Image (cartoon, rainbow, N blue to C red; front, side, top):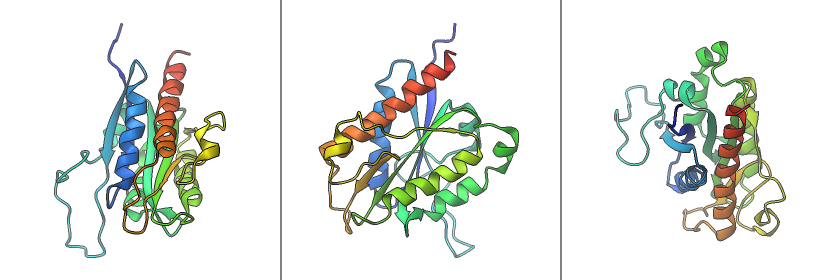
Length: 202
């Protein structure tokens, strides 16, 4: 019997660190579920200057994602900062390159969730989460949110939605992750891991 923990991909793009902190909390929630292990990965920034390239290995944080990570994972948490109510271009660019995985059904039937961080309190948290759901639906993934049985969803004033975990970082990124936001992110990671386990055991 294979005793290796199930790999759950936490894939994010973070410009100033806030989305990365959420990713780490979701990973913490995943790791708290016996039999599951978070695999944190990021995507490189993109540039309008065609000669500009990112280093092969990020200077800090998680390694860059590889398409094999999508094949190997049993579940996916996808995160991006908000860009005009949408996911960041770097994440969209990566997803646009997953046509082969779409054709082969690599992600079909795997559970997924989304998360985001915004500079302003009403800066498009929910629309960004919804924008990340669209390609996941096309990939045939099973989308999870945060149910209102999670008490912090009713008390938070810094982020957190039924569509996924979110964080208000402030324009300068000086707003810390609140206790409610932290609890919601960890709970989302736990829910993703628990669902992946149930699906593996059916």
